[in-house]
Amino acid sequence: MKGTIALIGFGEAGSTFARTAGWGSRAAAFDIAASRRSVMEPLGVRPYDSAAQAISGASLVLSLVTADQALAVALECADILSPDTLFCDMNSVAPGTKRQAARAFAEAGKRYVDVAVMAPVSPAHMAVPLTLSGPDAAMAHSLLSEAGFGACTMVGDAIGRASAIKLVRSVMVKGIEALTAEMMLAAQAEGVADAVLASLDASERRTSWPDRADYNLDRMLVHGRRRAAEMAEAARMLRDLGIEPLMTDGTVMRQKALGDLAIGDPPEGYAAKISAVSARYKGEH
Image (cartoon, rainbow, N blue to C red; front, side, top):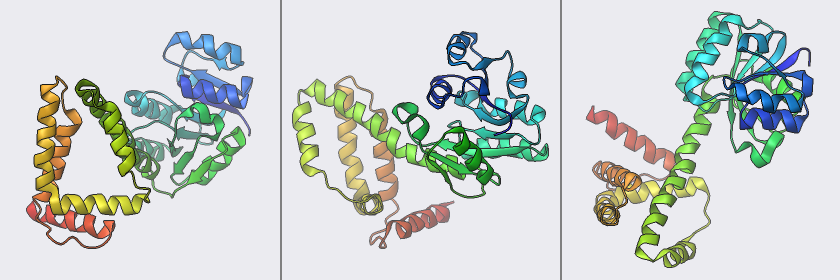
């Protein structure tokens, strides 16, 4: 790879990549927190006082900042980046945010790739799965692989596709985490944690996610109103325990919304069910 690897943001992800890959002085970095210099220097990474300085002469730029700073960093770099440099936006932001950033790069004649980090950086390190999308995804695959990333997958030319895969998946993954917290707070308060967990183990069925999605949608479309009533009682229990039912209140609303569609005989397959739900929603507006 000609030129350096520039890292904008040197938190857990950036420092882990630099350390594991052994980039040393091949890497230049800028972080808004000046204290991160104390992490850069022992790794041999060259610290800079601005993003403009860090990306000067770079072949590959990795943006690894907080989500609220991702767009501002991208827009700044679109103005000052060399046309030969590839900008990889690795931040967890909405597909629309990445599309907005990509438009600025396109207007400036610069290269931008949507990169989604699909798993925790630790302990995967350089084997963390990266999903890439955009017109320059193939170039990104080559440069990222050369930099030491071992699990890059291209998912098309459309900016936002990689981020959509990650964030839609996060609706489930992070949602389960939040539901787990709500459940365990209540289970502990009622003194039934062991029994609840044992019951969940006993009822756990190993099915594929396509089958599980189809089954869950079917249950809500057929029994959503009844299930909403049950979950309203669960929300009452949580409030009685002094636990705010943030997730459970949402479950009540989602179950009732699907049950209220009155799709009495749902079609086969999750895709057909979602199409039926979408068509009914459109018919209401």
